[in-house]
Length: 458
Image (cartoon, rainbow, N blue to C red; front, side):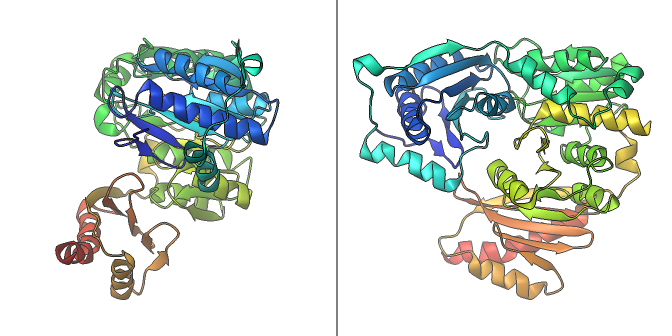
């Protein structure tokens, strides 16, 4: 089978629907995953959930049939957030889970994400082992050992209950404030869980983007430039905060009480400030996360560690470190006390807990602490190894702390630059952060110089 045009990564496979991503492709990968997972854990089910994308119902039927064809019992939990799928894998002691979602990708995309029995996305080694079945052949079940589909309707309520049951979460204090909030679910899978959770926390909700039909009214990634309608809603409704999710509800972005989108990194920074007073411990983020998160950890005396980019890499590093909280600067909060996955519902609860217990507005968590500007760039990857670039930059900046877990990150007390080859495109990503736009752009230019030279001779 031809997989040209697909983006195959550690955690899944994605592509444009009807182009690279077809029912045949989805069926092949789903069957391979089901055979691999149930061979490791015989008798356990596979959990399947989807986001709201238009192609979701079609691909769900395909995935069901593919899993049945290799003898799996399928627990279908319907349209739910990706973190709900992860939680259900743990709850049911399943062999694994499949989330049919392209997360923040454009509307014409869909994907299949592979979740292991621990509720984490597959590691690189697990993904390679599973994909080997595509070459060696997928063992199919005979007619009398085919699988079956069982419907499960309580997954979202269990997720909400698990968030509300967090022992340090001051639900009473949140309810007492009766916060007016604004919500934008972008016609995604958050349209059921988010208003239900906010209602349970005593909030009055003004909402947009609540029709879960996958016809996104804005670009689905919840970055500041895509949140104009939510900002306007905050101002018109008098909300104390605006919440925006991506279609599969693992990322959360914030708009402050003045209607200003403050950037996704502040979601994790505020979550860290919410958790550490009750749960002192380590904080882990990926290497491309803003220093506002590191500052939050240091303000509470917490040890801070970096992990390579990618949710599973952060989750594995958190598990190894016994971290209290962590995540990614794209609005992805990971609270191990709930589960080791990015989770926008728990992020909402933590932000409201912080507002309720400190009495401060969202804007204060921006203005009262050091502020930075992030600049992102990319250029074609040269055909020669990047080690030469890394060596040149380390020699040029001997005063910087170097981290080479994932490309090269050079760190100073108030700024940093990170170069890493993309795992899905033939490019090198360059991200820099500094106290000013000019300083951040200078770091990007400094990093581009040896890259450009190499690209010119490769």
